[in-house]
Image 1 (cartoon, rainbow, N blue to C red):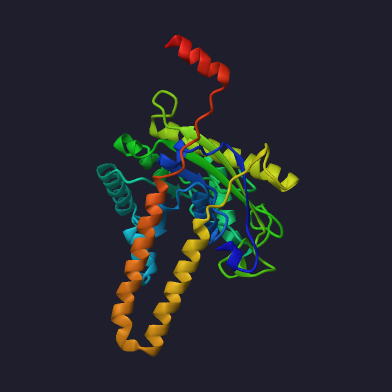
Image 2: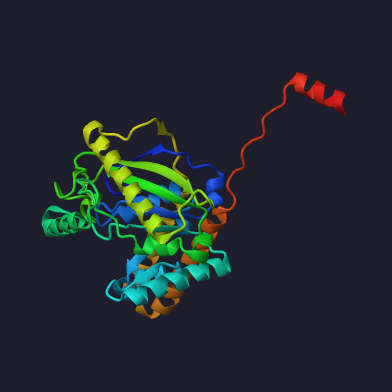
Length: 331
């Protein structure tokens, strides 16, 4: 998408490497919530690691009613929450995770524990969160909000834990002209992300993998909640470092962009143009066009899903002449 919005996005990755084996694992992803469109960049992050089709988000239930978009999200197993009915939301999460276990659904369940983001127009939210943190005895942070732990604890409780192999701790930051500190400047939005002068050029990701291993990962609810608070304390330090140095600590790891990005983009655009033409010029064909569009999308998704499980295996190391002679002697 980035090449077609007037400005190329430069994704830069730090921290733990994502191996070929990781592409076949299920992750509970914990990420800081920067802006309204960070999910777009996060989908790119997953696609760089051949896992875009596995991403599942928590979404407001109102989005379910959005034509086409909401229906597609529902079919893709997104989790829709009311956010005003705690019991309903907890049951929804438990039922969806039970479905993942039953059908063996591969997933990167993306969680934003902060629950919201802060802009210069929403400083009241920042004041409320900091006041609540002070009452709870939590540290007051400058770069992230104190996390809400209920959903995270539920995802790692009992059999729900079987849905995930590891917790993927992801910290994202944007390069110039955007700032890192909360409430200082407007972060990327849907419109300005496509403008040449406002879109971020560099998107930085720091990744830390935490395997869910019995005896090593917390078991009790309070310990799991505290573990999440500790991770956001780490994020605060990472973003403070980024604010001072313009990059995350440690070496940058190279990741190649899959060529399927371009094919999927152009296929989607051509299909949309085809649909639009028949809708406005030959309205009587709309019914057939609509179903053709759905079929093409389903085939495209199926093809891309198949790619996820057929990554190129690592090449075998060539044996030297001495190793071959030694092998013949042993035989």
